[in-house]
Length: 181
Image (cartoon, rainbow, N blue to C red; front, side, top):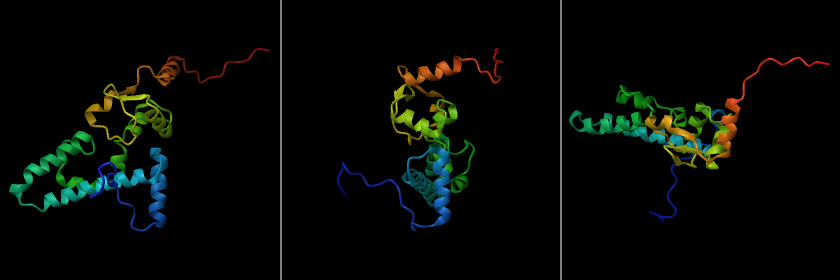
C-alpha cells in the first residue's frame, strides 16, 4: 500500500530499455513538445493505455450495462479535448501519445503564441508567468480542458507579459532601411 506522502508512480517504464525505434520516437516527441525527460512521455503513454483499457472493458460488457460507463468515458475525453464530441467508443482505441501531449499546458502556451519555443513555454509556466482561468499554474504537464483553452494568459504582474506586449506593439519591418553615408 505505501505511505500517503509517497504516492505510487503514475507511469510504466518501457519493457525493454534499449529499443532503438522507441528511443528515436521518444527523442522526436521530446524535441517537438519541449519535454524535460522521457518520464513525461511515459506518463502520457500510461494515460493512453488506461483509456484504451477502459474502452476495451466497456466494449466487452453487455449493452445494458455499458451505456452509462461509455457516456462517462466519452464525456471525460471530450471535455479534455482529446476526441471530438461525436466520437464513438471505438475511436478511443485509436488514441496515441501525441493526443495527450497536445493537451498539456506547455504545448498550448506555445501554440497560442505566448512563447517563442516549447522549452520557453515550460520555463514561463514553472516560473509562474502563466495563468489558467486567472489562477497561476506551475505544472507544465497539466492537462487543459477544451473549455479552458481560451483562458490561458500571462500573470497580470509578470515582467514577461510586458516584454511580449512590447514586442507585439513594435512595428514589424522586414526591409532594411538604406544607410546614408
